[in-house]
Image (cartoon, rainbow, N blue to C red; front, side, top):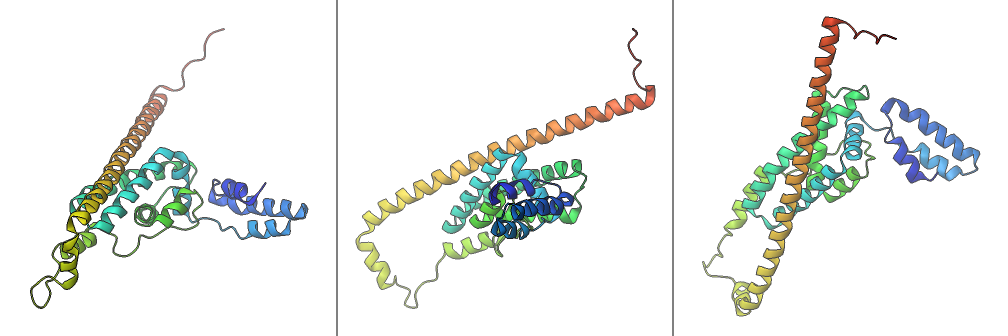
Length: 254
């Protein structure tokens, strides 16, 4: 096996199984005479609980992962252009989708014997917000091989962006109160620049609209999964309750 395949296996294991499995793979590589691979395997770090739960989420819900990644692209596009209306809409979707996905990350972790505490839950949510804010963080998360939780860059919040947008919407005048020389120069080719700006704006709007649509689809799928899980849990609880009241069902007669 190569390093990529081994890492894919290791980061899908429960945290308590990571060290032993890593040691076995490293020993096998040394036995095969590949000391370089053995050293690289030994350098793989066991994930923190929140990172491990995030990895489980990535592996279990590829559609939701894709939707979150595209929502991040739309948010970053709106952030760069300081479009307040788009930011308000996308930020609202951001918080809804992050909340749903963070809650869903708890279930597979609990089933594997690691209930998620409130602190771990916050780390999962911070990781998801980082995915939306930072393309490098998004790439790390989508690999399903996180070692530690991620943190969004400082200032990438709806409030901070909105404040920046308000400032950018009203640029300060020059000391003379007249447009600067550059502004006057830009006015000479304004029809050409206006056409280019319109095309760029239309493309930005298309990207943001697609990101919004993808995020809505991912959120809907995530909510459907959550509802299915809740129905299954409710059915199991009812079945357990019936068994406790009436005992096990009678064996069929021969």
